[in-house]
Image (cartoon, rainbow, N blue to C red):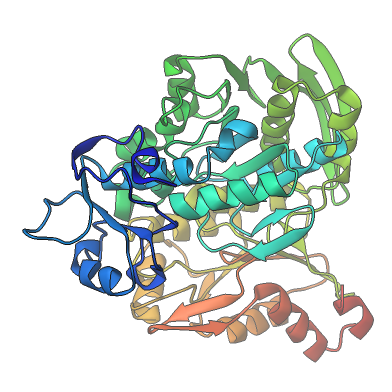
Length: 493
């Protein structure tokens, strides 16, 4: 692609006259540059891509894009832009010939529930006969391929390449989780959304956003103009106070959903238990009864979000019903571990105060003898939530086992001490070795109890002291239960 076509619609301050320059690819990492590539020298939080321009030139770059001025006597075309990250997103969309315009792109954002809502939507759309691409915290996948996820929302260049790959795979719809970091860093800029979903907002990532209002403003961007105007339809949870605020400010078509309040999509009746939910939904002027194997009252809100979105896209009643019923439990989201033990074990990704409260409240509703919970808090992340989560765990459970959860560069014992500051009583124990903590908690469990292993969910690694070692709560739980002489064949499930 010729350089003028590549930078079309980019806000350029100065560009060298070089219409004959042909660009064979784009890279934002100088190590990925090949002959004829455009190197986008971005300023990051840890380093500045402008430091690596010489390396990019040595590897054969054909042009440089930067917010900086062109160095004197620089030998290649240099495009100076107003906003480097938006420029990267726009050039990537231009290079791959705007694949999102040819897809029904659905973005799901919020603090909790993004993954489950995305999986439900994927199942509904597939049941309706569509080929669907998925970009989630757990995996990136299409009908013929799947790969473990890196970032929840990939960098803009990688994202446009994924959209292009989905198009080549024949996908009509793409469902993607959109993180607040991705919105703040313009990773989804120049992407055209058919629908956008807001699940909820509660304190998270405040080490990055600094305030809840800043966090909200980042999420709000998905519903405004990401380079193609607002989404065709916005679907908003008005059980959430931030959702109510968002619904009042959306410029285009907006559908609301709620478990408890008046809304376009609501719940008329719900019965839930260990086998899932039976729900009678109100879809504007219509009603629909569905069954779902998903556990947990919080999944009722996710189910509403998916049903509202699919309905707004014209999916028929049968596909809605069968798609919801066909959606299996999401990995690491209220996932049951059954080795024939006399107590229940659930693994869940809950790592925010609101998510932990929801999981424990749901556990209570299932009627166990006692609720025992294990959790920790991530290192080098928002420290203010640590005592809050300790207080929530104490309030909603009968015993709390505190342990390490991705301590990163922090002292695990110091993190545990900050969590314990939220406790009023002594119904807790701290054990930084997560495997040993799981063993101790299982040893404490009695017949009829419910044990929640919270925080890691689908994750398969433990980050500590600059290293990542393999660790999967689900595998470790099964291994410990086998050591306790529960059934080998059942543990294989």
